[in-house]
Image 1 (cartoon, rainbow over the protein chains, first blue to last red):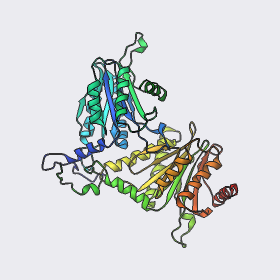
Image 2 (tube, each protein chain N blue to C red):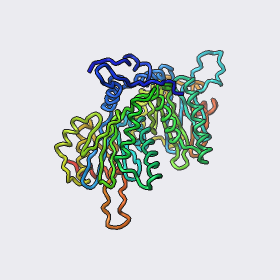
Image 3 (spheres, rainbow over the protein chains, first blue to last red):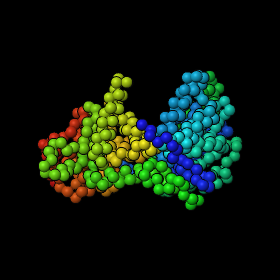
Image 4 (cartoon, rainbow over the protein chains, first blue to last red):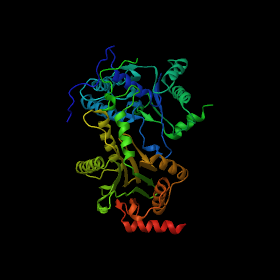
Length: 242
Length: 247
């Protein structure tokens, strides 16, 4: 069925791959997402923009759990994100099948990035119009990675992607310190998003996901699990902001 | 950064990115939906979900009973297709295949949200691979979910999908959205009759028309009768009479 045997992403005379640059422009048109790596965990958050009050917000999935120890959020084109979520989940299960463990974050990131790179070189396809932020905990501790449409990936202490990324990154640079606790990181990520949001910020207009390193004293507390905060929990955080 | 690559101009012909990060083919597919000239709405009430669309028979010689944009996909899920008729039939056929395969593989009926997601994922492929163009249709799905009750979903050529309390597609969809947003500021319609009435009222308002039964197509799923049911002309007549008598 794929009749195109040639790549649609080709070099321009100045050496640039313009389709990738345009894909990054598509990311820049998307809602802002931020991530912060704390000393004891990672938080990722995004603005949930709904074009209309008629949309049933509970049907939208901006933040996805890939496996117990890894979560993912995006900026850019929603439909492209869904494809990558499916791929990431399958990869994580394939890894588990071989090693009986969740994949370390950097391994999953490498495989996802590899898929995104393929779409910049294979015949008849366009690059993905999303940048991803992956948050996870593995034996190296908390991790935060960004993956771009080109397939490049970057580990970050704090990151921002999407519409308001420049201002958000400046904001984060001022407030970040490496002994930040997860609670403070959640607070800071909300403040960062707030800078870019037009209008009111409510518990339904943002999505927050956290994963904390195992701190348990008991046997049962040792597995870190990525979880999305509920509306009620987000409301609590919002009420603590001036 | 204003260098033009060898792909100059092709961003309008196949689904590759434009310099601003847009997909023109997808945007043109949306235009094709509006150009078809019809508008459809969907409303989800407390115990029911309704879809309604205009029935315009372009020629007196056409057999009106064969003109339809409302289709059953499974006994409990149906849809209204807005846009290019042929693309719509293609999608309906595919949706029926997907639903049947799901039932065969997993042993239970596909739910409206899973079907909507599957169709949206198929639409996404057409926005990323050059070999097939996006389809010029928007699919509004209603269905009865055993666990969640009435469901209303819409998919579009961009591969986007979402659940709605009310939605619209087609030429006057923006006006319909505005109308519905106002009407649904508070609680939605409770009874089946109110849900049907809101759907008809929305179409009447944005199309500035007083409908006769043969100008409309309506389908419902309700708590009492969760099977997807397309109303007959007599049923529609009864609803219109009821609304008229109310005033």
